[in-house]
Image (cartoon, rainbow, N blue to C red; front, top):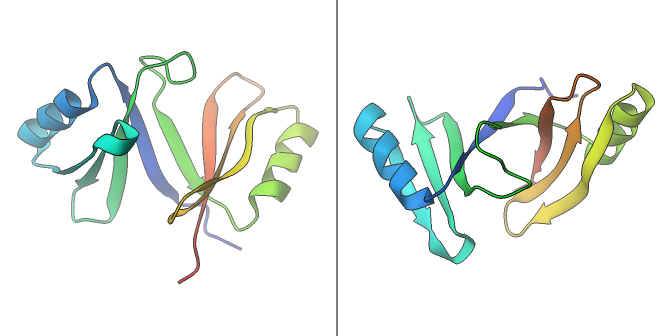
Length: 120
């Protein structure tokens, strides 16, 4: 079983490039633009913390930072979410070349995500 560590954070931004620039200048984060996905990755701290800036949309509103938690079995975890009174917002889906994710809402209304990386 995974340790359930936080493995990724997504911050909504109206302009992902400008957001990356802002945090790079503010905190010294390493920034990697991914224009094909309209996404900008960041590496924070000692390089163990990763995240990204996702474009603001109805699914990614301003103020809703999305936290990804490690999962050994996303399908099983999403099933448990429903059993425990939460709501599955996005079934398990592949992030090509990277891994899989699923998104859920807890009974209070908080939105979180699950992530499993590809085995190498």
